[in-house]
Length: 590
Image (cartoon, rainbow, N blue to C red):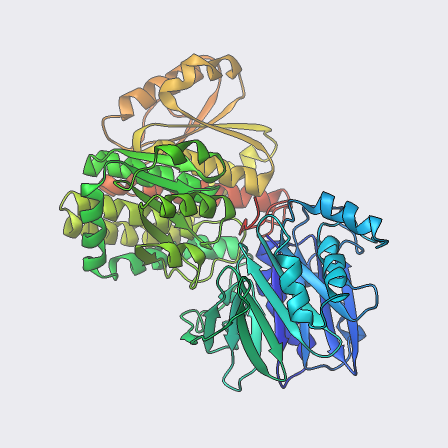
């Protein structure tokens, strides 16, 4: 959550900071702030709301250095006062944070007893005052920041700008990367996407490191020992990717249409990397898959494929609720983590335990330089291009398709898997290009716009697909959606079935179809209306959305109309579908 961006170079800092923030806005868009240093003074602009509504650039002077922050609120309301960055008492520096100070209450109480005054409701201001306290006995701002950061509990990354034109950033848990342009301008940010258009090189700042930028030079130190560290810049793989909506109205619909292109990256990857992972999976006692939110659904679908095609004991975990499994981990196990950002805090915490216990870790990540990738023994990059919408679509479909290929590789079916994925790609392209398919989904969206509750049924390969549909409906429409196994319907949710209840069913023409039809009959008998998504119609359905037949990957094809449906309901409701209320794309705090 939250996005940090800093610039030091030859150009006017404010426009660069704003552009960087706009590319970080998926991390939080409750409020934002920009600070620049010029003539030994720090000038700050802070506003509530989205950065796209900015009209305050003219308030900032022409300066060559500055920091910026976009906020997802954790402590304190969404107000201008609580927006970052926060001034020190003497205005000699400002500070912004990405994270949560878990021990902020005792720290605040201690500092108040020493006479420090607090203006905001944030835990971030505790860090500001703590740095001030450390400066009473330490003349160096960097050393004072180091001393303060060592007292913080939780995952925190902080960045400061001083009135002397110095930037200091420290990482503990939350992501931090540096960038360098062709003219040696320096950038520090929460991700590489934010500076990919202007930087040629990148550097991942590791946990427990502190960055100091002054006089156009960057130095990195170990927080524990204060030893200066050597570093090497790397090329940025994202630098040529466009981040614009092109002919589409929203990033969300653009990214759904980019799904076939994202899947094409999978079939281009090196077979040897799949064989190496397959060898480890075959030897494993247990394979765990783990993710949060949409990636948690993807992890569950990957576990399904491993059980179905590879006959592997695979268990899916949700990041925030996986700690009870930690004591069950063994060095004979493997853990697989799909992620867009590779920085999800609750997943990283579990992976850290897994690493200590000697488990092999495999990851499938879209963001270069992510911590999950750096922790992994088997590193797979999605290379699906930027996913700007907070609502994840093409990355989810890429993750589960990759998981399918991994499972097929374990069962010695890599080449067959590639053939099936290529067929899926072509079928998906045809489906998305056919306007009659889109119109059918739009018509269903119009029907559901005034419905408060939507139930989704699936079985086998489609159960986690309808869970993805549920997540997308909730994110885009703010409606109540409930996904359930078709066979479990009669055990509880049947009590909710009555005339007018809307049911979505995703199914495949396989051994589970008869059970799905039974569930359909059970809800229709009680007056519910059923819309089915699949490759084969039935007289039992009230309405039907046909998708191409793609055999083992039918369920992946079913994802597309579910995502489209959520999008079209959302825009008809007037919701801001690229930036749904209250959520952020990259959850880097617990």
